Length: 342
Ligand code: DAH
Image (cartoon, rainbow, N blue to C red):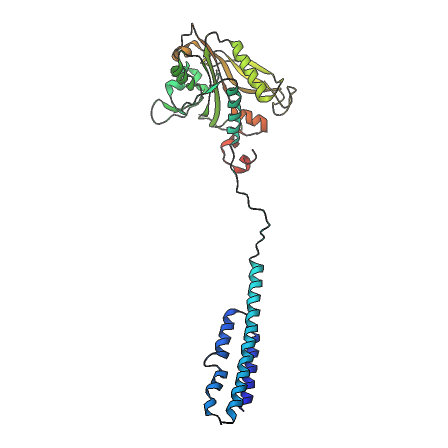
């Protein structure tokens, strides 16, 4: 009877082991079938109550059962472990031969790129860079540039005023001319003044409330309109390529006399007319002229002795032409889909 019981114990243990699939149930099985209070162990502890002759045989048989269960357990244990390993290998697969992930790399804003390029050209031509503030006084932005209060010419610059009377956001880089002249007088000047300008304007595809300008200023003895034209021609060639032509159209600015608009031959169609230059063959780059005697005086230079030329160029315009950007508002809309193209 004990022998049949032992057989059943073994069979039951082995059967149940078949269903064990993981570490936790493996341990549970071990406790149930090989632990202190398991059936085999109880046979061992019950040996004392058996007949003397039976004891060795039952003991031996119980040992065999225990060994069989232990052997089966060890086998199952290694199978479960292998399966677990296989599974984690499959689910946590790591391909060390894959190339690394690139971190997104920043870059310069297209307007800054154009600004830097223009500055570079003028620096190579011997111009120094002078920085002047974006928050300006009415006096420097207008009055000292020969634009008195209430003068109709002020309509050319719709202005952001601050709550402090007389303080505004500069509408152009020209007030820097006065700052620089007052610092340098009577020494000669050959400088560019790059930076952001602000206008209180209705925005559209070609008007934005902020944009960069590069002011050009040369002051000295005997500087002529020919120097202005020669400088702008040389700039155009260095910037847009050999053979490109420029054109000066008569214009008006209160701080220059005479004044002109600077056009450069369209570098795409070379003057034939295309959709970038709207069929005219020319692209408008900015204003220029000979520094007005009143402005020279305000800067501390005697207009009887000194003369000078000035210009104001728009780097965003250059970028727009070059990359055929159709809406100037794209520059400061902070849309990465736009910015990442440059
Ligand atoms: N300050 C002018 C503007 O923003 C541009 C300009 C015109 C600058 C003629 C100059 C100049 O220095 O000579 O409209």
